Structures are given as C-alpha cells and as structure tokens.
Image (tube, rainbow, N blue to C red; front, side, top):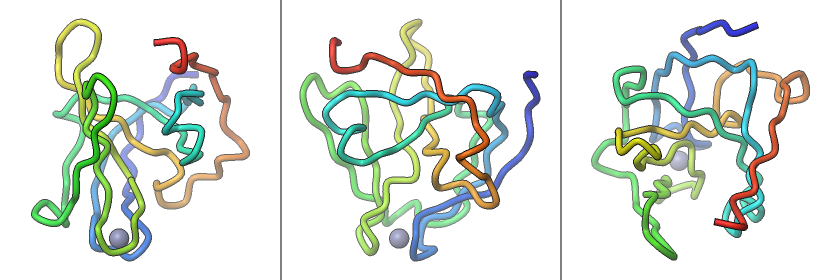
Length: 119
Ligand SMILES: [Zn+2]
C-alpha cells in the first residue's frame, strides 16, 4: 500500500547526506545504459519532499545523451545517491537511489521495470 515515510540517506563516505519523504511501495528498476551499470533503483519525488543536508557544494554532475538528467555523485566515494531532472509534465523532480537510503532492505521491495533503454 502507498505509504509515505521520511528516510535519511546519502553516499558511502557520508559527505552527501539527505532527507526524503517518499513512498517505496513500488521502486523503479531501469535498464538504460547508466542504470544498468550502476545498479541503481529509483523512487521519484518532488523537490519539496527532498532536503539535501550535506554535500551541496561537493556533488559532481554527470550528463550524457540528451542531457535531461543530472546524474549527481559524490567526488570522494563515487556514489550517486540522487539525480535531478524534469518529469514528463515539465516539473522538477528528484530521483532517489533507494539503495542509498538508510535501513531500507531492497530485497523486500517491489521492483517495477522501466524500459529506459528505449527512450
Ligand atoms: Zn561520498
């Protein structure tokens, strides 16, 4: 069932930390070229549901292809805990890498495949 909860999360070394309110009842597993290599699992939230607590000045940006999405990552440990971009309706969105949330057991989540490779 859809249930929003507040989670904390961040990169591996702790340089990047955030708080996010999200519903993890379905989590997106994307097959695009970068998600495949990174193994990231995503949940999407509006900017109001996301607060970066540490690392604002540090995160590096990686873009490729049509450059719709800012694949942000920590320059120290290399982990990409969240990305920024625009939703299909044009609104800003933040993609949270569910694997980077504290105390979330990914094995218990329902994964929804997304065919990002075909975009
Ligand atoms: Zn880090």
